[in-house]
Amino acid sequence: MKTLEISGLHKQFVDSYTDEVVTAVGDVSFAVEQGEFISVLGPSGCGKTTVLNIVAGFEKQTDGSVLVGGREISGPSPERGVVFQSFALFPWKTVLGNVVFGLRMRGVPRQEREPIARQYLDLVGLEGFERKFPHELSGGMQQRLGVARVLANEPEVMLMDEPFASVDAQTRRKLQEDLTGIFESKRPTVFFVTHDVDEAVFLSDRVVVLSSRPSQVNEIVTVPLERPRDWRSVLDDPDFRHTVTHITDLLSGDESRVVQADLDSA
Ligand SMILES: Nc1ncnc2c1ncn2[C@@H]1O[C@H](COP(=O)(O)OP(=O)(O)O)[C@@H](O)[C@H]1O
Ligand SMILES: [Mg+2]
Image (cartoon, rainbow, N blue to C red):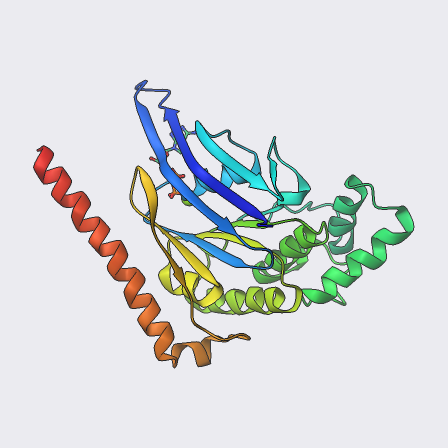
């Protein structure tokens, strides 16, 4: 069974100032396999965050369906854990306490919480930092704690929305490698939103390329790169360059169609 199945997804918003109807998502369909890393890529404003928010249960679609493990979703749930850009950690709880909290919420018996939390902190490379507080960690370590907290809940799918958008290029590469390493050792199902082509190709098994608004799936591109991956070898790999070029062409072809449509309607 597919872990996540999105069919004919459509979302309209009514702008609260102008009362204008905005179609954020036109018609989006794709499925995600268990243990797959999928990226949703597209130009800014094409509705990526809207798709993720619908999958997370924060927004309701106007039309179409989203199935997780074969069931229609009905609101937010730890089975679709979101790693927020701001990491959304509890500043007054220790590193260990942040992970234990989610386990408590999920009803994991008291004596099992700490060993499970430690296991996930080890997985993301935070062993030895259990008693620290979030403000004592670097941005990258906070990110890893955010990932540990979501993974400890053993979600059906982990959702991430441009988590590295606000960090410098050097740090971003490191965080991407960290995430790849965690993915390769634990194989969670990941739904990752980005507008960065290199990032999508480096991280993903497949990339869902969306067109500009009203968004549709332009193409689903399979990434032909072996795992484990690191930037050093990926950058030397001609398959990486070919895939990036192909996706960049898809995006720029889409952009010129939009410009032409604007000219035609002018
Ligand atoms: N709550 C909302 N109310 C009205 N319009 C919205 C709302 N959320 C998003 N939009 C609009 O929907 C479109 C897609 O937004 P979004 O999903 O954030 O795009 P992306 O994440 O790809 O940049 C944009 O035009 C945005 O202005
Ligand atoms: Mg967005």
